[in-house]
Each structure stands twice: as structure tokens, then as C-alpha cells.
Amino acid sequence: MIAATTPSPASEPILSVKDLHVRFSVAGGLLRQRRTIHAVNGVDLAVQPGQCVSLVGESGCGKSTTALAIMGLQAPSSGAITVEGRPVYGPGAPDRLARARLAQIVFQDPFSTLNPRETIGRALSQPLMLHGVRDRADRVATALRQVGLLPDHATRYPHEFSGGQRQRIGIARALILGPRLIVLDEPVSALDVSIRAQIINLLMDLQQDLGLSYLMISHDLGVVEHVSDRVAVMFAGQIVEEGGWREVFTAPAHPYTRRLIETIPNPARLTGGAQDILPPAPEPPSGTRFWPPIDQRPEIGRPPEPSTFLNIGDDHRVRVRAGS
Image (tube, rainbow, N blue to C red; front, top):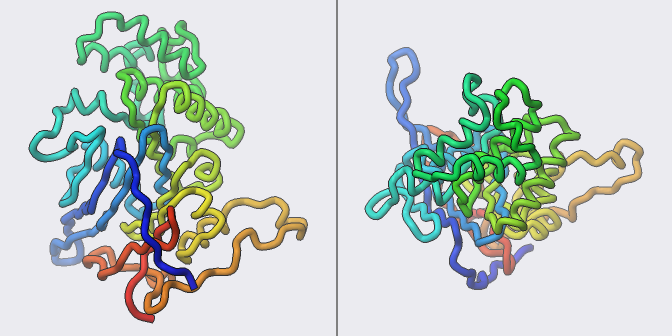
């Protein structure tokens, strides 16, 4: 049985998300009656300067909605989001131009985010024009070099690049205004396996060279394992487990986390040479049970049932509910 502990204090985060809720009102059924979809429920996240925090979970769990809310692209129903101490919503929130200098996002499909009628140079220079930057050509050339492309590529169009090169362009566009926080929404899931490693290595080099902080959205724990300082596991709109990558990957507590880790490909299993990669499943703290249960998916049309995010280590938390 795992025991509850007291967390250690942390420094001021570059990104702070507290009790984030996102709800949608939709119409459905024969009578077109409206109902409320609870997409994100009580999410708490923090990214420290220089960290990579990964938010993982299956499709539809609410992780991309969380990312959009952080970027100011989806208004939250309630909760607080701050970037570098400045609120993203509400009184005192920066305008859209100022917010663009604080955080940027790299999307899963780079081709769909590029105008096919614009050269790459124009696509990269437009944010600079909006912010009144004069040395735009030099800044574009620098950004292209940073992501492993040539300045001459600025005269080409999106269709002239491969998928991996387009993602490099997407990363360059995210860097062009010099933000300290980058949200990576499935940055390599649309790429060939051989290209994924190149993009991941590029992101890690940029993080070290430029002092960047990342929030990575992903369903691929094989990628997350190699780049993350911390991991938050999301299921049905709630974070069910969170901690340092070593704690989460070597001693996962929540059954959903264990299920995700067991999906990581292990070639040795095919030859019978691999044992179980996880330790035996732990028992929840006395008088509680892990929540939500993975054998009974929560109804997204109803508010989530009360639960507690419990500390089970110095850098490890899991969601539980009273009862057995």
C-alpha cells in the first residue's frame, strides 16, 4: 500500500494552471436538447523555467483543449492561467500581441498551418511585421538556421518541403518572436519514425541553447519518456497522475498510467526475452481507491464526482476517492 506524503516547495513557474475547467454547451438528440460537455475538469499544472512537462493521454481526454486554453485560443469556463506571472484571461491580461511574445504553439500538422500561396520567408516575417521589427530578413535567416534549414529556403513554398522540414518551419515560426514557453501539440506524431528522432533531438538542443520551457501534448509515451522532466497523465478530462518522469515511469500508481506504459513497444517481448517492465501494481492509500476507474468511463455530460489529488511521494501525486 502506498502512503500519502507532503510535497516539497517549488520555485516560481513560467506556466501555472490552477483548477482549469472547460465546458461546452452542445445540442443533440431528436429534440435538439442542449447539454453541457465537461471537457476539462480541475486541471492543475506548473512548468518551471527550463523544464519540459508532458501532458499525456488518449485522444479525446482533454489535453489539446487544455493546450488551447493556455494559448488563449479557448476561453476557460473557470480557473486561472498565468504565463511568466501574467494572467492569460481576465483583468491585467496582456493583449494578443503581447501574449504572442510570452508563449507560442507548434501544431501536429505543420502543412495545415501554412498558407500554400505564401513563401516560408513571408510566413515567418508576418509576426515580426505585426510587432514592428525592422531587421526581419536577418531574424528569419537566424530562425531557419536554428532549426537546421538554410536562409535560401525562405523563398520556397510549403509544398516544396518534406513533412519533417515543414515541422522545422513550424518550430522556427514559434521561435521567431523569442518566447520562453513553447506548447508542443503532438509535434512528431504525424512524422515518419526516422524523422521523429531528428525533430526530438532538435527540440532538446533548442531547449538547452535558448533556455526554453516546453509543455508537450502527446499520446506517445515512448517519445515522452526521452524528453520530459515531468509527466502529467490525463484521463477523461482530469489529471490522474503527475510527477517526475522517473517516478511516473518506474513506479506508476494509477491503473490508467500503467495501461499507457504497457503500450510502449518492447521488441524483446516478441522473442520472449523480456519480463514485465513494471513493478507489481500498488494498493491505494488506506480508505481510498484510484479514481476514476478505467473499467467504467466517466460520463462527460455530467460533472466529475469528487476526488482528491494525493501526494504519494516527494514528486509524485495520484488521484483517489474515498471508499473501497
